[in-house]
Length: 640
Picture 1: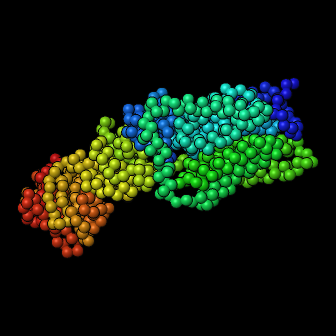
Picture 2 (picture 1 turned 90 degrees about the vertical axis):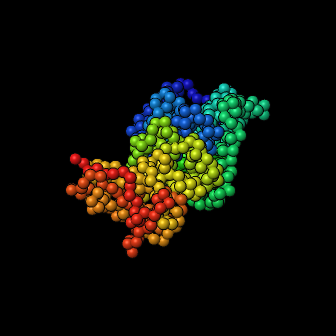
């Protein structure tokens, strides 16, 4: 029977039921089945309107790149180009859709499962713990609620960490094969991981330590260490060599490197609080995973302390990077944790299986630790199942879908729009103003998107609509003041609005002035049967403490009234006491024609104080209008 070779360090002999290439092939087959099954299960839940605000940013960035706009010069981005390039490639192969984007992330997630299985398998084999670690690591990661959420969403976190983990598994292969080609390929893969997102730098130190471990185990000196490190570095550099030829390096450095630097000046140091988050994340959401990972780490430190030390360094670098994030977004950044935990959990399962089957007199503490870890897994299982169930179907985001439908109906395919979040524009099939594709809170609060920039690009692209749904652009007070003067709110949903430029929304221009309070710009008029829908456009001239009421009277040629609606502007959502100077208000009213209404009805509109009944005086064409009312120029004709 063929026996496996191991590094020249003595370890306790561990009985095995199966060995050799046939067993390795069987394990590979089981891992493949688990990975494919995970992909099929995950793919059942790819259809909600939106998982996270960042999804729209990623999807729209890829769309705009496909339209010929360049990252960093036309499209602002604080990350490397790998993720949008992956999405763009998938769009060109399979069509442009949210589901294709999510499948792209899922593909990277499955790569991560392969990397987790391979690395866990190699570690367990090195420590003499059998072949159960690979399949167990796949299950540990696939059943992690946060992975389940991220791997089905268009995010930047899963791709770089999955690819980086595969690089680590490739490099570890060098420790047994002594062939530098594994290191060159590992360098290529790590280079691509860093193209996807620089978060992969947390794997660089463990990667180098693995290389040096292989050199030490091979009994070779500094010369081999140098050549091995060079092979790794050359692979990574080869991936990055084309970068300056494709992208503006100065803009890249300013946005990708400058953004986290600027963010550190804005957000305070909350390391102690973030450390508490990590403890809660492990003890509340991932207790079973943490228990098995702890068991696996202890086993590696006992059987192969060098390997266990590398995993310990990996975890330490991860925790240090997390507590020093500014700001820390737990749902995203904690992806750094569950990859090493899943690898160690796989080793932990192999440890428990081997220990409980082959318990020895001197290993009672390890038997107790194995039993304790398995008990914690069982106790935590209902909680984990509940978290997985919560992640299956997120909030429906119905209003976001309605906003996308409005944009699709009221704008042309060639129009530019602004969506906050950009998912609105993407779902509507419209292009976003490129420089505003990335309206992140970090960018705004760090001062990397200014009022002047936002106004300049909006004027340049003249978007047909601006949907403010997430509140990120609301932080730009000067920009919002400019929008209020040049755009009208044509859709309102609580604090969410869709704005449209005045020259596109006002059907009938009819300027007039109402005292010192408001300017009347014009109106829209539509009829459906005997129902009249009237939208009035006001511009605030000066603050007022009075909440005026809008009157709308349908008057016939005989001077009698045949329909009326009085009420506050925009059904009370835009009271005049809340108007700011320069703000444009779209104010919709509905009137019903009286059954005996004659032809050629005229609409009379104006503002009055509901407490006194006094109307604001009206001036048209520099002349005061009798009755303090605006008589609209378009007649209303009753249906036959």
